[in-house]
Length: 306
Image 1 (cartoon, helix red, strand yellow):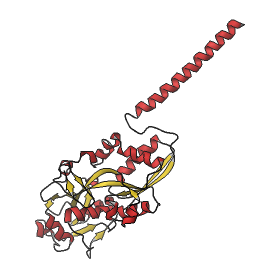
Image 2 (cartoon, one colour; image 1 turned 90 degrees about the vertical axis):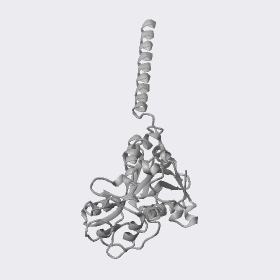
Image 3 (cartoon, helix red, strand yellow; image 1 turned 45 degrees about the horizontal axis):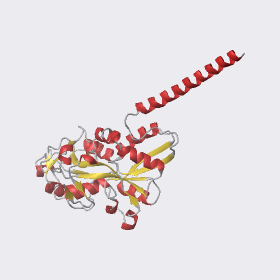
Image 4 (spheres, rainbow, N blue to C red; image 1 turned 45 degrees about the vertical axis):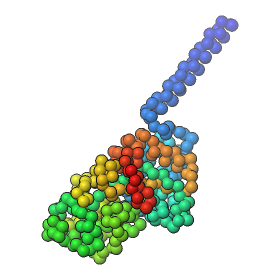
């Protein structure tokens, strides 16, 4: 009887050790499948995150949020556009956990509201003036752009293009893309001209420019494709290399603002976006530039330093 009990206990111990071994193996496989990401799968992490604002940043946040939710099933993330001003306002008022913005908060909000927000810079976005492919130009000078967006030039033949009326597709005043374009491409704010089209979403701007004869607008590089003509600026192409070395000036940091320090789920999401996995993967893949690659820096006043 003793011999039987000894054998039974040995068998039980063997089964238990095997089960533990399999559990450890399954756990390590999960870790390996995620590579070297700084964010690991967590069943404990939970919460709801609303990220609102910049449509220039929206493709990146949407793509990364899906990956993050796959790795953290207890977290739900909603991503909405509406423009940088909307995102900053909702974040400062506590209506959204994250305000996505192409501009520094102090450029859009009163000083007291801006002071409540914490800046998380996740990438750099460059922007280019774009036209309908039939207008007949592939580049404009700064002055020509100013003349077009202030209504002094109204026909493409005045800047070397076809004899065709210029149709401006602009962004609303709340748009961070518009603020960046006006500040760094035009060097001045502009009024909304009679007859111009105003659209809030970058995807809609691209569609309108591609389909409207004589149209001109501006888009983040992440939205560019062969449906529109991206214009050189003072002879310089809007490329990643030209942005990073400082020769192409129309760019901005992409910010994800939180009101004060973020909660655990939001912090984990922001840490994930800042990870090497995302910075060298999704950020580059979608046409953004990792901030770490920049050879120049820019402050809220627009001052550039090496």
